[in-house]
Length: 102
Image 1 (cartoon, rainbow, N blue to C red):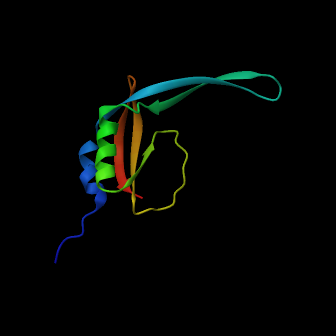
Image 2: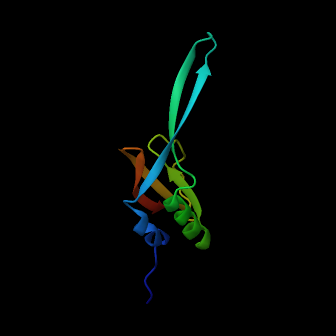
Image 3: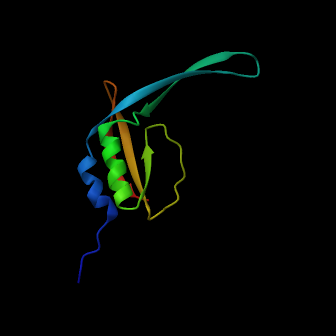
């Protein structure tokens, strides 16, 4: 009997790797005319690790969802999707904390 392979297993080599943070600054004006400044932290789309994960996901015919610490999303399960969860470790970097199917 062959062992069932979890698609996330091929991604575990990426856990612990750093990913460069990009800060996007923007402002919003509310209905009272008050303007507030915001900083959004996201990952660098051109980061080598992210690019490599995209290739592995594409080759495995899996969709890729990347979660940064402030990402909002649904909790629905999809067997054709890989979730990459990152945490902010400071000094301008996220670190890949967990990768799973869903």
